[in-house]
Image (cartoon, rainbow, N blue to C red; front, side, top):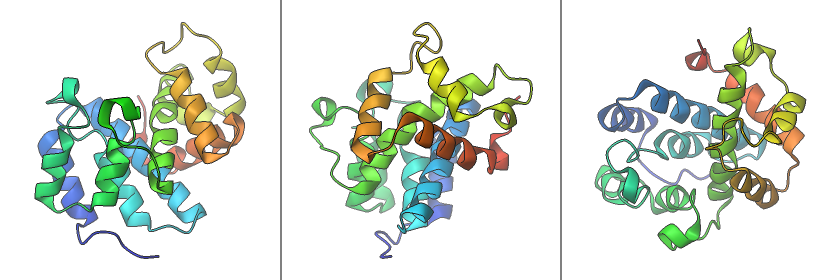
Length: 188
């Protein structure tokens, strides 16, 4: 497992704290980080690089939502983040917005984890035990309700599933397992 960047997780976390003040957006970044760590271990990839991409994928969202994720590039380049991580971050939106195709495994998994992890959090908020009380079957069923979490793109979720070659049940259960293991994600 080759490490892509000399940029450290600690540096990434400091960057997150500098650019993201919104508590819920930080939690979303932690959720995506947890999911990316899970898949890095499962796919024998560099866990730190995958954690960094999950943690920083929305680094510019709070300050520059209209130009996200393009406005992240100078922030990440100045910090010394590798081009592969930057390209994965640019690829977590539709290529028509950034002209960057998702080619790496990291980029494809980031795209697949982003929207679905947000949907899972919204679903967990409805349950008494929050994340502890949910399973992939419930997530898959709730995805069919277009009015629930309507800002979550079902099309992005479906595209992500196709790109990583998993069905919704398997992917949802993997993300739930990853997020349940992260104590930073206690949802109240």
